[in-house]
Amino acid sequence: MEHILNHEKAHQKYFEEMTAIPHGSYHEQAYSEYLVAFAKEHGLKWIQDDMYNVIVYKDASAGYEDHAPIILQAHTDMVCEKNKDTDFDFEKDALQLYIEDGFLRAKGTTLGADDGVGVAYMLALLGDPHAKHPPLECVFTVQEEVGLYGAMALKKEYFQAKRMINLDDGGENATCTTSAGGVNVIMRKERILVPADGNGYQIDVFGLHGGHSGGEIDKEHGNANKLLARVLFTLNRRYGVQLSWMQGGIKDNAIPREASAAFVCQADLETVAACVQEMKTIFARELEFSDAGVDLAVKEIALDAVLCIEDSEEVITLLMTLPNGLRHHSMSIEGLSTASSNIGVVTTDEEALTINASLRGAMESYVDTLAMEMDALAEVFGFHSEHEARYPAWSYRADSPMRECLKTVCHRVLGKELQLVAVHGGLECGVFKAMDEDMDIVTMGPKMQDIHTPQEALDLASFDATFTLLKAYLEEL
Image (cartoon, rainbow, N blue to C red; front, side, top):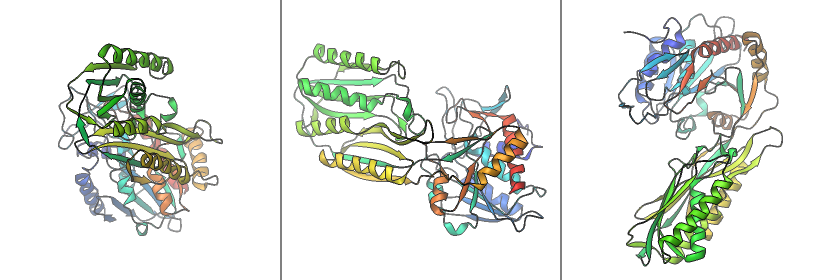
């Protein structure tokens, strides 16, 4: 079989083997069984839980028997995205790898370097009888990309270590120091319809940039759901509208790029279109530097049933008033968002209209406060709210021996200063910190580009250099 990567380098070999086994989120079982077989083949102790998380234990190398153990951790699931013209089944097909200008890519699909690189590093260390290191507890989690669910299912008794290296990072000479916690607030209102009376219209908001609600919430990108709510609120104030349905956004943690709504109104098309054009002009001016492509469209449609006037006003007013965007920023770490809300998804089905808001905070109290605000507003406007997918924050630790050691080794091995990074996204580090408050955590990873997209690329030179750094770091621990 022809190899794309250099199999004389163990981490490259194991990464390529991983790309041959489908491992999208919720479909990690086959790769989990691969890990168990690997552990058995190498005579290593292992645990596999019901979710297909795997922990593999390796004894300390000679001379490191009295050193404190270390957790190494990465997730096995990948984001499955492909180009529209790519014929590919993520549940059956092996990724088609190729190298271009020193970068590893997959033809028409995501590569899964996030976080296959971390998985490959651990396997290379576990399989190397000459590696120097303390006792290792290598953790391979599942379902990270869809809510940190694998990590949340781990049991504290699986671990002895109070030191941890998370291998789900990038930048080569960068390490993360803190991440947000969060929760999703789901707000539902029963959809009771009455006969439509008036002219039927559909309004679409589109052309927005979007982005991840953790990493880009401070970029002032327009939220399609909130913009559409402003249009509906304005139309309702002027002419009175009765909403039939609304759809906006795809993922709770993504800033929505498009949204649509249908309603009836007594005003004619010319009047409604003039109002829509007025709002488009306002949005274009407000979003000139963040969403220059923002656009709105209106058309006549036939509608048989709509919400009653009171319910329609409650839906529109709630969407208008729900807090959205950056709520707090750090006073000590420049550029760090510390609390935010994203009105990510609005859906309508036969039974209800549902709003899904993704809330993030650097402290649990921030998350609690944001959630209470959503609950209070939902109650005022006749919605039922509930919380889902809560995950803990990883708070900054000023005195981190792990980080200080990594600074020294990074300078010696790479000739570079260690860059400290704080993120507003959620990381599995927070789950381990919540499991053991004394856990000292650093993150590592090679340079990558365009993760979660079909343009994803792994810098192979950095992939090698970061593994050299990791091995040297373990020797100092």
